[in-house]
Length: 134
Length: 134
DNA sequence: CACGTTGATTAGACTAATTCTAATCTAAGA
DNA sequence: TCTTAGATTAGAATTAGTCTAATCAACGTG
Ligand SMILES: [Mn+2]
Ligand SMILES: [Mn+2]
Ligand SMILES: [Zn+2]
Ligand SMILES: [Zn+2]
Image (tube, rainbow over all chains, first blue to last red; front, top):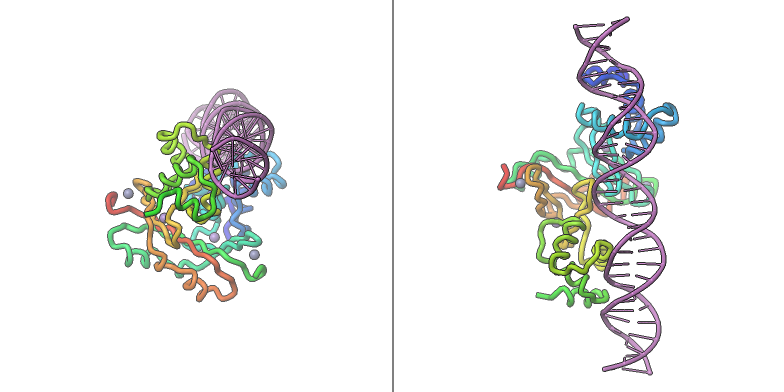
């Protein structure tokens, strides 16, 4: 299991304590957190980090392919350390966001129906009640 | 073809010149505009309307079922006078958002694969290049 | 068809998320 | 170790959207 530092080096990203701390938090997280959630959590263990650095680091990690953005709600960005292609399910009661398999709807499937377009990606969000909430 | 005023009366929404102007603009629009785009366009013909009223009117029309929100980009809301269930295609070059048929991926399809969840809705966004841009 | 009530409109203050700025600091290659 | 390009920082600026409280107007009632 590679450490956050090893991931950064692999991607030729300059290693700093802040970046490693953000990446370490993200790698153990399945909650699709917002930048502010990341800031508050990392800030507890590393009180010197600033919000600007969290935003900067998110951009750096996005560019390096270590992170992706998920479009789940309008008011705030949520990020996802699972960079594989997949879809999402959002519980309308408790708000949790879970992963769903990409096979449910692939870009290829859309291509078959949309001949005149060049389809590169497809994202799907299902909404309803999760196992706990229904 | 019903007028904006007739639509408002049907939905028991108090008719005002501002609401009719916003609804008239929206009904002739397939661009999934943002609140600010609505404000700027309506403001040209109706210079007395305020931004607050545009936001208020959007909420009123959403509640009345004459409008829906589409989650397409993070930075701003986009609204859709097409209130039927459907999906969207966003062109990565020119930014236009077009409608896609709901049949491509329905809530029923997801239900079959997610037995433990109670799926209420499903939204899909495909991205790529449109006919003009590819 | 004037009246009165209830709800709509308004400008501008406010909030929250994000970006920018410019001074300071530091990772890492030479 | 030295150097420097790039990273970090606090706080200001920006932007989308909400709130406030004063004014206005739609429309049901008489
Ligand atoms: Mn995910
Ligand atoms: Mn649409
Ligand atoms: Zn739940
Ligand atoms: Zn295009």
